[in-house]
Structure formats: structure tokens, C-alpha cells
Length: 247
Image (cartoon, rainbow, N blue to C red):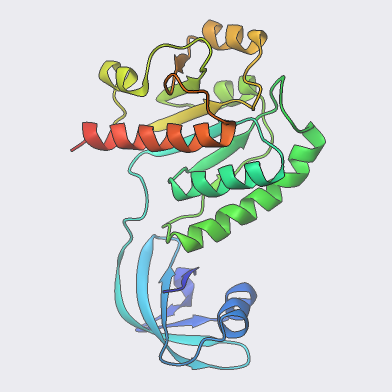
């Protein structure tokens, strides 16, 4: 069932009027939807609406609400990713999969071995935000995550507050996510930041910085993973351990 984001102001009693240009064009022109077809809609309050199209005019789609309920398509802790952007398809993959895995936001960080220059990263942010939006629609997320502007580790860690910060450093770390959760499990409502570097890993200067900040440095095991694989494995395992600790 196609999934679209709306605002609560579009809800009128038992119907929803979809007249914003992007959604209208997608439903009426791209999908060529017809009356009687179903749509799944969600508003800014995370209320999900199961609807059926009643009518389509030259400027509006009218949908009747069959059912509505609070969406459950989100994590009950805030998961953020700070990551050194990769080139083209690999970075698009990371943005898409981190959205599917429920991140609340992505912080692009330029590291010493980063594949992209600052100017390129800054230009790519709108593209990555669009990928997040489309991926959120495809996997029926309750909210669209935010792709933030380029930031440094120093600024990120000094201006933002997190309950847990995890750096994945395959070359020097020995402690696992499970070890970390045994010492300090993530709780409902916590803000968690996961930091992952580029293909070349972090520099010695960056390792020293993490150590000076007393950040938790973890491993994903004995295998060396590509950066985009490491992101999906790290986020997936973290969510798994959280679920097991909060049953």
C-alpha cells in the first residue's frame, strides 16, 4: 500500500484532502491511482491513516479514512549516526539503510581520511535528505530523519548531549556491543550516537581524540568490513541488543 506523509490540517472529519503538489503528482500522475485504491497516510503527530481514494480532481486527491491509530514504526530511543561520507552509491546506500534502521538523524563528519571534500559534502546534504524522505515512505516510518549539515566531532560532542556515544574502531578495539550493554544498557528515551569512519578508518590523531574524550570504542568482530557494511551491522546489532535488554 503506498505510504505518504501529510499534515493534520489536511484531515477533515473522516476524509483527507491531498492537494500539496508533491503528493498529488505522485499519487495522481506517477502512480495513476484510481478511486477505490488504498493509501496509507501519516501526519506529523505520528497518526497513521488507512484510507481509500474517493475522488481525484485536477488538483486534489480525496481519501476516506477507514482506520486511524498511533504508528509504531519508530525506535523508542533516539539513535544518531555520525559518519565520514563515502563516494556516490556507497553513501546513498548508508543513508537509505540507516533510515530503514530507524536513525533519528545523520551527522556528516569530515575525517582525516574522508573520501570527499567539505564543499562536496555540503552540496550533497540536500540529496541525502531526499533519500531519507523517500526511504521513510518506502518503509512506512512514522517520521523522516534529519540529515544535518557538515559538522566536526568537537562541535558535535560539545553542543549536543548524548546518553551514550559509541565509536567503532576495528583495528584497536576489543570490547563488543554486548560488553557495552552489560556495563551500561541503553534505556527507553536515551539519545545514542554511533560514530563510524571512512574506508581507510580513523587516523591516529582521531584515535587519540576519542581516547582523550573517554569515548567507548567497540569492535564488530574479527572480520574487516567495508564502511557501508559496518554501518548496517553496527546499527542492526545495537538495536538487537537494545531489544533483548528491554523485554
